[in-house]
Image 1: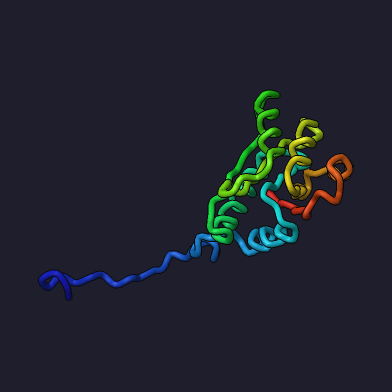
Image 2: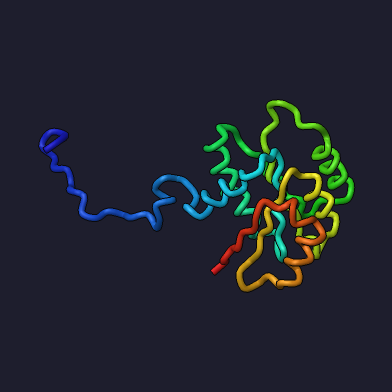
Length: 165
């Protein structure tokens, strides 16, 4: 009994989180493994290169930034080129080509598919590394191959297959 003789109701049910990730606040194990796979080569800027749509890649960038902040101890900046005009893309390209400054956070650059906007190739090449992002069931093999060839296979640290189901 508490509060002057009032009984405290016992806990009768436990709300379980849908996943361990919700309990810990971390993205899934698969995303954590993807983060560490991207570190096989040092980078300050990583281009996330979709083959079909950029919208699903933005959520991937946010998850990677969460893991990256925990791992690096500093926030990662996320930049999406979707909807940027030519002058904005030119400014971004200039900033990517400038020598890295101490204390500047790492950057995840989400570009539009190069099949939609070929200027994404220049942005991806200005980044230290790139990650190919394909959607299970939506990506056409020729789009993925064309993206790899246009940017250069050796510029990619890997490929991730996203399942939107």
